Length: 83
Image 1: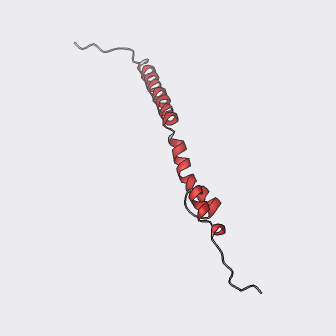
Image 2: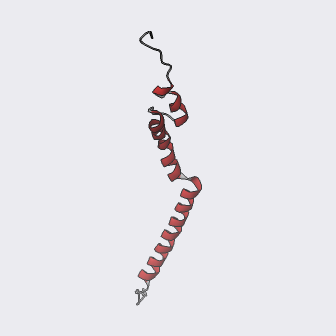
Image 3: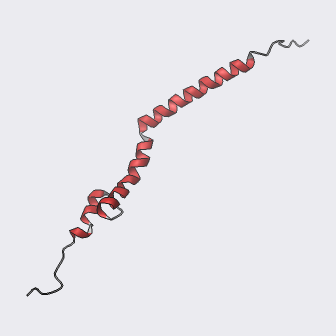
């Protein structure tokens, strides 16, 4: 004969505690990886370099390269002969 357990009321509680423990562990590991490798900082700072170059120099490039390409840096010559 096959014996069956008569009381299964605690199984849901045990499984939910195990799942919560696993999820908390995965969350702690994932946040540790994000902080250690600085993924969020890389996603923001990479494109920001180009935007900063456009703000400072009017060219879609890094700020140090964009400054040399700004129109104020061009050599100008007079178009009219001074009298």
